[in-house]
Length: 281
Ligand code: NAP
Image 1: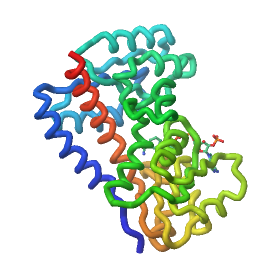
Image 2 (image 1 turned 60 degrees about the vertical axis):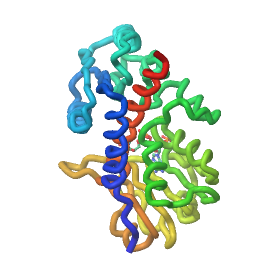
Image 3 (image 1 turned 180 degrees about the vertical axis):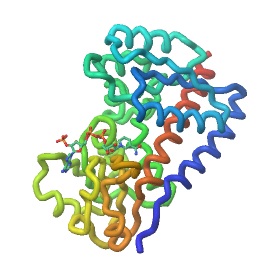
Image 4 (image 1 turned 30 degrees about the vertical axis):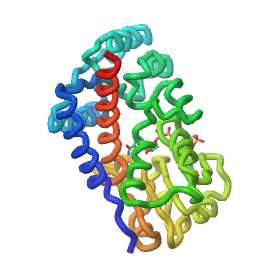
């Protein structure tokens, strides 16, 4: 039976660390939540973040623009956030509507407030190993899970399914920085099952429930499931739970795995941004 890597446990440990750092700061860090429209997924995510912020004494401020907003309006909102010294970080809810140049909006955020590592500057910094920039939170959350459970990364063959700028590609870089040998797979990858079976560490960020089944797994592997797909009222991961439990050494499920850690990492980045703002004064 596989060891369960619980994201809830890791997130709780991060929140405990944050409570102490916020007390040390002596003021409430403030998070800007920038969104366009009223998409139910965005609103649910914001409610969950607000609950966690309230529990830690972090303040939130909404920048809610109408669905038909233009790129120019989003850029002005980003500027307004950038110049506010009392706002320490910004979460931009994505994806943005099609008419908006999402990359331009991400790039308009001041690097020190880009706590989700979305801008090309933050991603470039990750690529060259500059650790002062924030890495995308979900990618970082995978590393946090492995570290918390003292699972070594160096020397492993890590196979990442998915190459998005949000998860797969930055995660590949983070794993490389930690001396893994990394294979990043995508929809055109051939012999995916064989590649996955060859992995010591397998991380799936695709969004296809059940994609990773017994044919992709073997004994001794560590498996992280990042994929999330709503089917009715159920949240499903990419990994077949019964197969992972029966076959591998350790795995993180959906729900209760990487997703739980992602928000904790975001809030930790916010607190780090607030600490750096104090030092710059
Ligand atoms: P995305 O932008 O849609 O990327 C999906 C990736 O999967 C693409 O690179 C795609 O390849 C690849 N892919 C598609 N079919 C594949 C297949 N059969 N075999 C191998 N690769 C395949 O999605 P994303 O934003 O990276 O998110 C991925 C998943 O993670 C989603 O389910 C999302 O909901 C979830 N997620 C979870 C969290 C969290 O905190 N837990 C955060 C972010 C995302 P191509 O590049 O060739 O199209």
